[in-house]
Length: 165
Image (tube, rainbow, N blue to C red; front, side, top):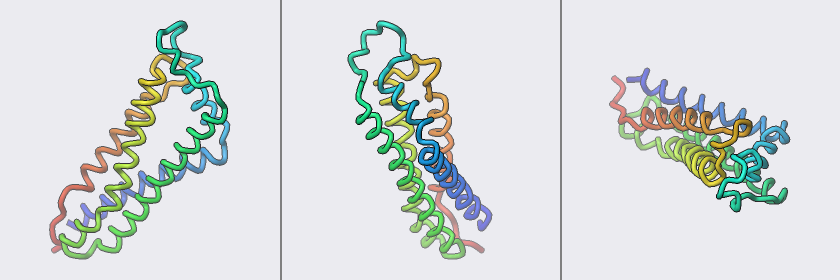
């Protein structure tokens, strides 16, 4: 049973590490993903003349606000995951009830992460701003892949643990 607990902590922290690197990259190479956000919101690489171009946003202030929101959302999920991982690490040798009861921050971080991929990238970016139509600025595959990775980790972490014996 200790192996399962350690695996849950390791996978949670690995996802937190991934998000920490994403946040670091977004802050230190701001322009790369800012361009991605701007093009998605501008809808300038979607199918020409599509009937939904009225949704396009043409405001650098809104691009920056959206990008800042994405970075903050990633940082929140990352912080919750690391805090959850630390809490689980401290309870790794405890009773099943204590370890299971310590999963709240971990589950919150994973849920915040899943919501970002599903809401911000798949629903809003992918469908509202038709990101799927762009050959250049299409993050749907990455968003789907990261949603699946996060969901698998959430399901695993959420599995009830038994007493270590």
